Image (cartoon, rainbow, N blue to C red):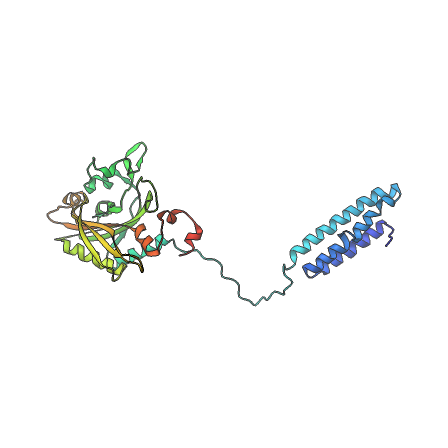
Amino acid sequence: MIIRLTPAYLRALEQAASIAVRQAATLPALEAVRVEYLGRRGKITTALQTLPHLPLEERRGLGRQANEVKRRIEALLIERRRSLPTSDRPIDRSLPVGRPERGHLHPLTLFSRRVMEIWRSFGYDVYEGPELEEAKTNFDDLNVPPDHPARDVQDTFFIQDHPELVLRTHTSTVQIRWPKSYGVKPPFKVVEIGKVYRHEATDATHESMFFQCDGVLVDRQVTMAHLVTTLKAFMDRLYPGKPSRIRPSFFPFVEPGIELDLWWKQPSKPGQWLEILGAGLVHPNVVRSMGLKPNQWQGFAFGMGLDRLAMLEYGIPDIRLFYSGNLEFLQQF
Ligand code: DAH
């Protein structure tokens, strides 16, 4: 088609194009409008191609006008494209919307709460002590002497310029803090679940930060029978039907000390005894640290790592996954 390019023709073209854009109800229809006006053989493109044949004095003004019209039509196309549904399938507004994704508790939190609920049901108070702890409470008050290897810089995070402070290496500190910082008078029984820190090389079963649960009971004439019965009742609630055994052991803060092992057997794998917790009758020196007289009050105490138990529970092969912030891992729970 031979056209005569005039300002009026360009205005008419722009008007027709903007109406066509507005009327295009689907993306394919809009694309057809684009091709009709701006495609290689489109009306605007063809009009621009006639420019070189025009007298010089008309050429400049019309050229600018034609380019502006082109830009405005392009802008209209872009705007319209945004407002159209991406599929030409009609939208069914009565369909239920997808459920928004919800967060959930960390596997260690889930497991800790289970452990906590069992102790609570046994009548234990729950305490939350400081992670930045006095070296005295973490060690001395618990009958851990100054030359004990657990204090070694290899194991303990000390605080620079504050030799009196450490990141607590165990939650056994609850034995001192509950009666001393809170002024709680015996008889009492209390558990604490929280983070502890040890300066260790990390691997699949060791992290420098992990979770422990410690508990202590103080009363008159507490014996090993009370302790063993309590621990067995706890294990029966946590892992019903799994056999457990008690072995003699040593911890500075108890005398005598024991460890409890659990028989862990998975289908088609050989079973094994797993060390679950340490415990014992509170050492007389620790009873004194509590501000109590050992000839009047006795107690038992126990402590366990929660990460390893949670790993067994959920079949997690590497402790570092707990603290990796890896969403693919966390979303499985
Ligand atoms: N604190 C010990 C540890 O971190 C565990 C422990 C052993 C706690 C015996 C106790 C206990 O209360 O009586 O390995």
